[in-house]
Image (cartoon, rainbow, N blue to C red; front, side, top):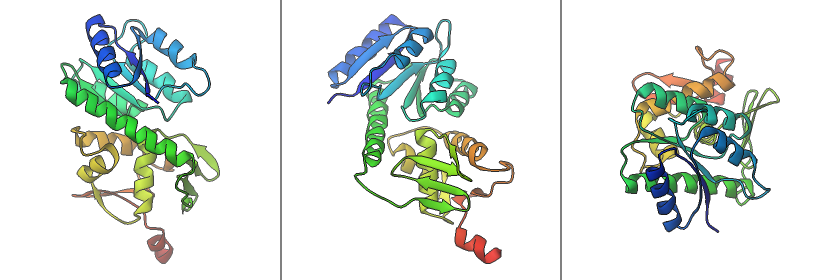
Length: 245
């Protein structure tokens, strides 16, 4: 079945071009030109027909793309969001990632690169969906009060659910499967975002900071996701904690 994609782009030339290319690639594409229409489209979906990807311009009339992303993530932590924007400022990219966007491209963009990003996000979303359907059963990962259930795509902390985006969940799951292992930022980009992703280290830093705010009692003094100076990050080794205790 074709993937269903929502394209939010106020420039008619770009919007039409993106729609044509997505359809040529075998996908279904709905194109809207402003943030309000995007929110309506995201809310007005029949069961089983949710969007598989949202391509979101940040510079929109009325409700801007950042606000659309913010509202989407309040109720949907899984649908991949690809930011497409003419704003090259790092601040806008970081804010978008902090709000839960999964990836970004800046205008002017090369269509083959954009389509590669689209396909990568769709593949990861499909793998997550297959995991949720129980194709591969794995026991929950437990560290203290933190429980990561890959099959149900669910995280709880001291019994309370933790809402994570797809990338945040993928990062946390990767860390928890390799306790004590130090990952470089480049390794995390390759393992979570894919080798075709050509983003920057701050993409990882932003997601780590957001994860810490959600699972750490004190993000400034993290227990679970620790900084390895000169290397990157690692997840606490429960066995080492027990020995220290």
